[in-house]
Length: 138
Image (cartoon, rainbow, N blue to C red; front, side, top):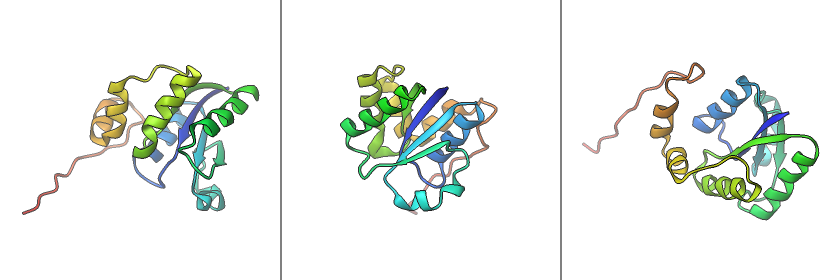
């Protein structure tokens, strides 16, 4: 089964919308979270097919071991990503180590900049409507 791994997620916003989009596109979605509360609120994440708790999402070695278990269980991992700032580079490092897709520096910069990411995906049918507000210190 074609699978996309997500490292970390918020209850709303771009990271959650990416999970929803991946599920709508027919991917099996796996979310690794360091938030025990998400396990207790599992029913609030219907777009997540498998929700897994790890004490630390910064432990690349542990994440690689866990993802390898998924591969051995028959999952075809097509991407490993994160839209949560501290984990974007972790996901890129894991992708490189496991040779999952090809994530470029440009892609990392785009995932770290939510406005750029939304602009890049705006033409896709599953992208929700959005607008940008400029904060002023006036």
